[in-house]
Amino acid sequence: MNKDCLFCRIVAGEIPSTRIYEDAQVMAFRDINPAAPQHILLIPRRHIHSVAALEPGDAVLMGHLLLSARAVAEQEGFAETGFRCVLNTGEDGGQTVGHLHLHLLAGRQMHWPPG
Image: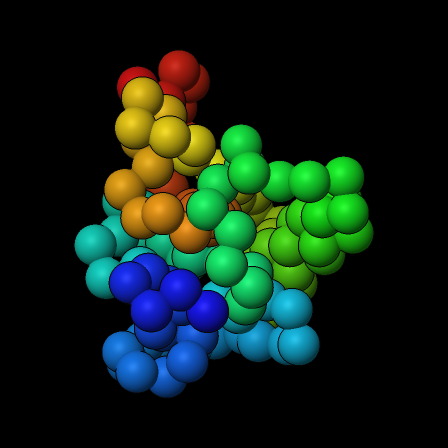
């Protein structure tokens, strides 16, 4: 755990969140500043700064993160209508919290390019 990391503190229960899914490796909670009617963040429980910090041994975790996103989409009822998964990396990529996180967005038509 990184004591200076917002998401590590959420994992530890120090900061409240609306958790909707969790297992031994991943947790999911609603974004407090949603960009879509459904905006859920999925994070690994272990601190990883970003996609750029991933190592070959993290391949199974990243697969599990994506499968968890699918499970959440099914649980929340938007798997059939569609959703978007976004992983921002670094300042230019739009990452605002230094803990790897996947944005699961749904509930409206997604446009391309995203911006």
